[in-house]
Length: 65
Length: 545
Image (cartoon, rainbow over all chains, first blue to last red; front, top):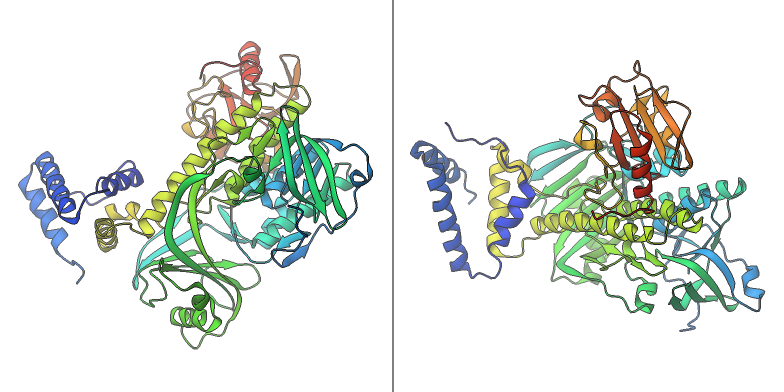
């Protein structure tokens, strides 16, 4: 299955609140650690290396300067 | 207190000049069933609703009319529907600027657009923009028309409540006027006296919540421009006049522009006309001619009272709950408070429902306030990221959104006001219909074309039965009461009304509350079941919800 870039979240506002709220009270280094751990957990859930490589490419391109 | 009555703000419209009341010349305080403190949009809507129901109402306001400044400008569909029921909607629609679409930009790029009312078949539009003074003026004109028709709504200008004593019989008020003080007794007091509510303070009640560390500059400019009548919102706009900006059209060639300034600013300096003009010029281009009509800087908070009912004192609107302006959930939710409160208090005053019905005002409108505060807080957290990681996620969403659709629903420039569904609340009756979710018990009735007009216009001010292909017409007797029936024949039961009220069902009977929320629904008319739902919806029989 290719990387799904269509809207797929049932409750986008609720997800975003949880995502940002997870960082409450963390230092910048801890926040970075949280993000890294989160990406690894989600990557394992996705499992498919082709999909993950596609996501990595899309995330990397057009990063604002 | 007894401080002199000095206007705290200049008036846009002098609507209710001070006039001496007979209550000022009596030895013992006059008794009134309902006194409302505050003649703003919420107080006037509550007064009008109760007055049209036949209740004598006194409104006390410490000014003689509406203050200047456009302030609340976005009035939502549900508010307009309520205003229609109260006889003020047509004037608002005629004057207001109708809109339903919005565009969101990041820097120079349009990221996406949205449509708040993508379906047809509603009398009222998704939104109108109308300066708050006009909204209040139209309500007051409807009050004058109601009074000409026999209603007793007494709006007293320059009547300031300086002290009060509340107990189980109501409240005794010390009222100051230009001619000195007097006292009146309110069997029920409705505090619609704004976010800084003096009534709330006099009762020593709390108002807890979050302060957001940001300042927003409002510049209302008068110009003739051919921008479409849409809500345009910029994140990090290329013209650098603020970290976000909002553009909205109002009547009379006035445009509302909002700039997000950040927390650490010099208010006085920012409000200087030359500094406001510099920001506006950068946005519109130096060659565009305009006049500055009104400017203001605001900060905001999201907070609410724990309870909106304290004995016989009820809080409605900003006195009870306060949100950020993003989403237009302030005045709109306040008018919906009045809508929820008026029929309940009318039934209690007539002895048709127990006083405990007013607890459901508190329960339902606290739920609505929570929903509004949640949406408002999320929007504000997106606009004003509170940490560097929060900013990083926000910027990532914005930078992905133009190319990838998935990121667009995450962008939050304000989730615009929609009415609360009172799910799982005590007044809800049976849902025995395999009908659409949007018309389940607790939901506000969606409008639909019916005959030569619209469904909501026919629902009326009392409990109503809506029969769709279920064979009822005229009136329906239930639990010793006669309810009016809005009959939709089998032939008429197609198109929007069928989609919104039948779904897959062949026929339906709805019990609809006076505030046009669904109380219960069935595939056919069962008197015993409807009687149970009616008793429940009026608080006469309570069930564990």
